[in-house]
Image (tube, rainbow, N blue to C red):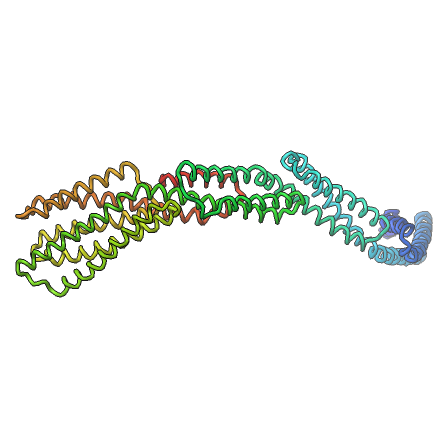
Length: 516
């Protein structure tokens, strides 16, 4: 058993002289030898390492000799002699280990940074390879800037070769600075390949199409619809767009993608803004043409009602009925409101004949007119309630009539204010309401008063108005919601072709009054 233990101890010394122990040190030594030949900065270090390496080699040879002799003679040795030999070999092994660690530590200071840079460069090479493969597939979609991309690609290749030369001669400082420039080049290359095709398509296809469409809308509005658009200075606007468009193309040719995207967003934003102005004028023109006569009729009806209510007040005075202070006050206020309304309708009529005034301005004046009309109707409504309060049934029906009248006037103003186009079905509902109003109005004016007939007409009128209010009121709310959505998401359409197509289709439906 004792002999077996000695045999195991002797065998374990074989691991001390395995050549693999020196392999890493030899590789480091050889690498620094190459560096020292091309970079004088490392000559002194190499001389020191050479001495250390010679000592390691001598120590290893001596250790190898001792181990070999021991393995041949250990069976003839006494236990004490064997112990001495093992201790001697152990000391040599520790000496060799210490020298290996020393030279490894010194060499690592030189080679660790080199290894890091080599690994980092290997990563950049792989990224560059992936981007180059992607570029091969997208080259046609980047044909406008292919020469510039080739220059950038060649720059990366030249810098990579220079990096390899710097690493070979151990110039890690300059290699580190160069690899940072290569990193920037790789990022720029990848950004161009990823974003470039979309930018090129937007710049050379989408924007010219948008401008062509804009010119078509403008020409149709001016020539076919006779809409005056002088206030938007379209010719100068197109010149400015053309200037920005050329600037964007120059930036793209210089591969300045960030600036190009800013110009593209600016271009699309301005094109859409001009388009919205023109479409607003077209829509205002359509609404104005459709609502001009109804608006005049509404105001004319209010003026007629004022004449009737003056007659009613006069009749009551002739019958000896003393008008209370409240009625007198309302009549005074109503007189001023009607005078203001009459003046506004005259100004409105004169203004409408001026062809140089934009339809949006005309529509705005129409809204002012209708709002003044509402104020007058409200006063007459209050007056009717006071005049007919002695006849509860007649007063109630008259109130319902005036409420319906007020609701329709208010709704008509909202329709115009929200730029709503009514359908033929909704127009027919208006006709039905007007007919029912006329029947009720006649019934209220006939003496003696027929309460049953008036109540039936009033019921029909209120039902018709409620039905119409529900449909058109919903349309108004839908219009507001759609307008807000268009405003909220409009900036996102600049760089998204699918979203922009959806917007264009949605805007057409919106302008046509198809809100669903």
